[in-house]
Image (cartoon, rainbow, N blue to C red):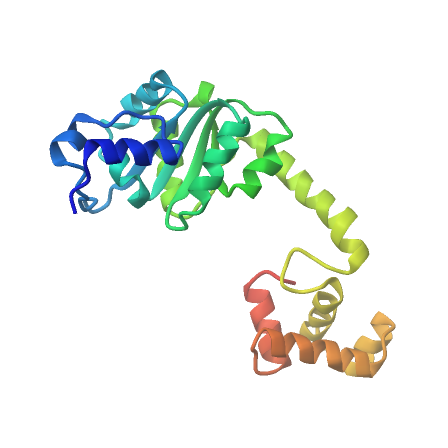
Length: 243
């Protein structure tokens, strides 16, 4: 069914999309079209027309990019959010975009407070670029990296993210015997010992658990991960970087 300009505008407002319909959208009546092969479809969200125009002016000429009209924004591979800072309005927009699991979200931001890092993670942001560094090549790199399933962060934010994860492991997970992987700390240690050739009795001695506990723990790992035996568990956990 053809989408009218008014309907497109209503959808834009509901989704926090602060753009006017483009001329192409008005002439096409909002009909969907296929993305040409090899190009990344991008929807730009900005808090004012100047920010939006600036970003679109940068990436529009590039053959790697297909800019998506408002009425088709839900089919974009990448949503690019351009703001001065991460405030409550931005968070609401990021949360709405997060519901579309087929689209990855990148953030181009003027000022990034350290406290916004946790918010960014919770909202599923896959990449961040500071506006002062947002030239044409950087924007295209950001978009294509996200389309390839990669994440992009400025070096200082990456460092803060790693510190945040390390702190989470030390202060929250370690005291509970948990880890960020699918294995608990105890499970990972026992699988590592199996990989080094130790038997049940030796693992029990090294970990100060009973042989019965060792057998139960290893059986739980094999069962939970739907593996065949201990050897399969060792191979699986090594391939996935769990030990």
